[in-house]
Amino acid sequence: MRLAHISDLHLGKTLYNYPLMEDQEYILEKIAAVLVERHVDVLLIAGDVYDRNVAPESGIKVLRKFLNRLVEAGIRVLIISGNHDSAERLTFGGEFMTEKGIFFSKPYDGTIDPVTLTDAYGPVNFYLLPFIKPSIVQHYFEDERIETYEDAVRCAVRHMHVNAGERNVILAHQNILSAKRCESEENIIGGLDAVSDAVFSDFDYTALGHIHSLQKIGKNNVYFCGTPLKYSISEFDQEKKMPLVTLGEKGRVDVDTVPLIPKRDLRKIRGTFDEIMRMAKNDPNNHEDFIDITLTDENEIMDAMANLRTVYPNVLRLSYDNAASRASESTEKDPGVRGDRPLSIFEEFYKSRRGSGMSVEQKSYMQSLIERIWGEDE
Image (cartoon, rainbow, N blue to C red; front, side, top):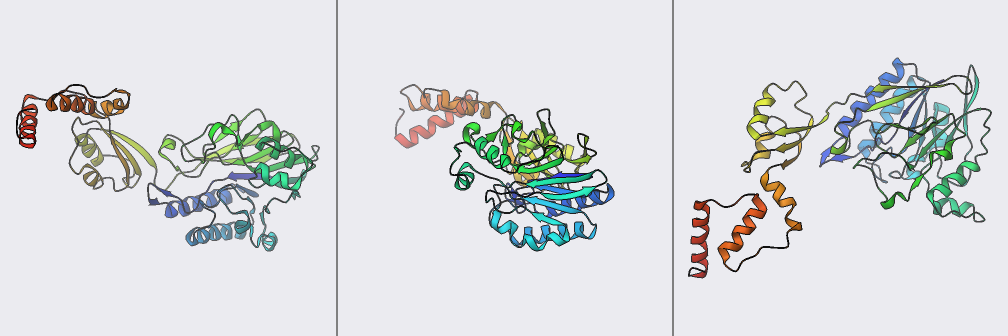
């Protein structure tokens, strides 16, 4: 049986106020094409289908179009809710979709019955565990002590009564202790929501969502697939990929990955204003990409953002790396300006912000302003 694993679609998300729905629809179309081309039997979607609890209408339409394509191709789909989803809204009407081969996790109620599919090697049991918190699980197991996320997930898995002699796959949306994180992820301080990958030791493959970068955890087949698109500047150097999992007989699991090429990439560009404007003329990459620009000019450029957007229309952010910006970063560590003369005070302030002293002309001009304001040479 061949599986594909995606998660954290975050349909409806914006990137620095740029709507990403067009990019999300594009990448889902590419994913569908890969699934058909690679003869995938089952697609696993491990949570955070939408970016917020109340799904946008445009996101619902995009998901429906994507699922219709898979139904037409005979590809079965298993979907769980993540922490960004409303479990009730996402799974509403899910029981009517099973005939089409689409299976949704139900809101957690203390029981999870597997979806069992078969191939030449026999049954494969798929357990759909939606995002859970300790308080949710404790409600159904009052006699058990459930204080941490680890306690909650262990309890939920234990009550699945997994037959370790058969092939088992679990979909879950939880943080893992050793996982590497990105800026775009929801973070609980101290990693209090993290669990050990050992919780999933009875499964042949664990399809995780929640963490936004592709990574294998531990020695077992515990995988975060990451997001299909880059959702923060911290992800600019990541190559987004989709795991393809081939389940053979019990104990035989092969995992490969397929690159996911976006409609618009997210890139960083660094240099002086003039260098970047010249470079743009021969830039072989897509000028419509989302760009984070760092200017190294010592002086701020008038209307820099507006001018840069004439060559790169989707500039997300503009920052400077020069003596002034570096001095500004260290200003908080400075105990404060010293001196009793206004000009001396301003000189220290200027140096703390610009990283260099004032010129003779600047001092003269500032002194003239001081005399005009105070009416005398202070």
